[in-house]
Length: 481
Image: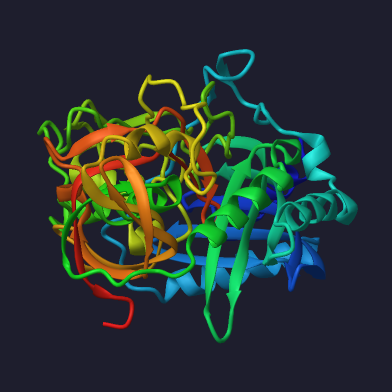
C-alpha cells in the first residue's frame, strides 16, 4: 500500500467513527512534485520545485453534501478535515443530484502497456528518471534549445511533473496510481524594436524527459522566427488553411471543454449529437487517459470519483459517438460515468484531458522543405491553391458555446500559400470560427501523418494533434481589430 492510499484509508476510518456507517464519502490523496526551469534573454533565470500532498474529501450524509481539503496529513489534520466537512454537510442545502459512490472495480491497463488487462496497483509507463530529474537535466535541454537558436533571443521553460495519487470511499473502492510528464515550451525572437519582432515557437510533451530534444525544438522555433519577418497585411475573408499541431491543440481543448462535456450535453448547451455524422469522415477523436502504442503517455488510471479510466471514442469516422460523464452528469443522462470526474466537474462539467485526433496513415514527409513548417504539415501545404499556414492560436474565447463559435488571434507565425508554396509571411490576424463547422463533412481536405503530444499551458491535460488542412477559416481582421 502506498503512503497516499494509507492516508485515504485513515480518512475513511475517521468518517465511519465520526459520521457513522450511513455516511457516504470519497477521499482523494494526491502527491504532486513539479520542477520548473525557466529561461529568458537566452539564459536560465529561475529553478523552482514544489512538492505538495493534498487531501480532498467529499461527504454525503442526511441527503446533504459538503467538501473539504487539507495539506496537513497527520492524525490531527485529518481528524480536523473530517470534523469540519461533517459540520458543513449538516448545514448545507439538500443535494438532490447526489449520484452515489463508485462501487469496487479493478483498474484497466492500456493496450499500449505490458500486462494488458485489469489491475488494482500503480500505473504502467512511469519513468523514474523523469520523476527524479534534477535542474542539470532540465538545464541541458535549455542549453541545447538556446544553442540551436543560433543567436536569436529565446525564452521558455522545461518542466517535469510526477504525481502519485490514491482514492478510497466508504463503498470499498480503493485504488492508486502514478503518472509523470516532461514538457518544454520555448520561443525564439528575431528582428528589432525599430524593424519589428517576429517570434517562432516549439512545444512538446512526453512521458519521459529523454523524449525532449532541446536542439530540435530550438532549431524549429528559430526557423519560424526568421521566416516570419516582414509580414504582409491580409484582408478579411474565408481562407483555406493548414493548421499546425499547436493550433489544432486549441480546437481539441475547446471541443473537450464545451462540446464533449457531459454536463453541457445534458443541459443542451453542446453541439454534440451522438449517432450523427457531424464531422468529416477523416476525423476520429479519442480520449486516451492510459496512453496508447501511438502516444505512450499514461495519466492516472482512475478519476476523482474512483471510476476506472479507459479509452473513449468520441468521434469515429466523422460520427459523434459519445460525450464524457462523471457520476452526476451520467445519472442525469441515464448513462454510466466514463471516468471524467474532476474537482470541478460538478460545477464545470466533466472534460476529456487526453484527447488525440488520429493522424492519417500517410507517412510523415521526409522531403526537404522550409524548416519553419512542421514535417507533417509539408504535404498538406503542397495541396493548397491559395491559403494560409497557421502555427498557433492564442487568446481564444468562446462566443457561443452551443455552436462553439470561437474568436481569437494567430501567433508565432502565419504565412501565405500560393500554388503549394510559401510566398510571404503574414501579420497576425483575428478569426471568428465555429470549430465543429470547420471540421464538418467535406471540410477536412487532409490530416498530417504524425500526431504531436502537446502540453496544456495551465493544467495537466495532454493533447495529441496532427496538422490539419481545412477548406475554410474565417479571418475577420488583423490583430488590432
